[in-house]
Image 1 (cartoon, rainbow, N blue to C red):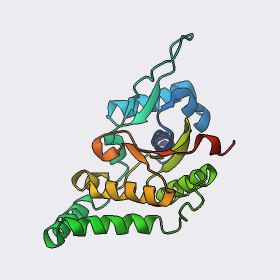
Image 2 (cartoon, rainbow, N blue to C red):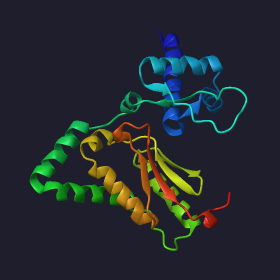
Image 3 (spheres, one colour):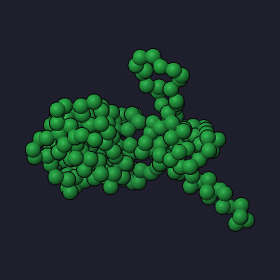
Length: 226
């Protein structure tokens, strides 16, 4: 009956919205999910429980608390590798086979050249840092995140101490990158070149982390004021 299908369709749309939040904002609390999506606490819990039962979500490790405070910190949730995989990795087998053939025909140099050309095409519209100022570095980091988001990486930036971090919450080629780390290495090289400073890769989805994180140092006296 059509009437009976509507609640199910709405439930599926809400579940997809929860998954998207876990992808882009995770680790995130149940309260934050409820506020963002206008859901009751019971509604959020129902969706989280379902995602946890299927192995698509999990409670994130509690952050180390500094000093003493009242109460227990709210639990935060994030997608698992299973959850990210179900978002889609189109043509993984074909892409992996093509990369293996490229290596057989052209060797490691051919794979590395392909990886560099690929990331160059992703960042083609991003202007590299020229002045080396903290504000310009932050702006360029945001431009890089936007370019990667357009390519399906759900990327964002966040201020951490005297630097910024580029976070890629999804990787549409993570399964291929597990076999060909040259893809990740080329990204790091491109970030260093575009930002004009040494950057450090802290985590990668291909290595089993929740998201890819790249730390970009910014001169402490020259960070952009917010």
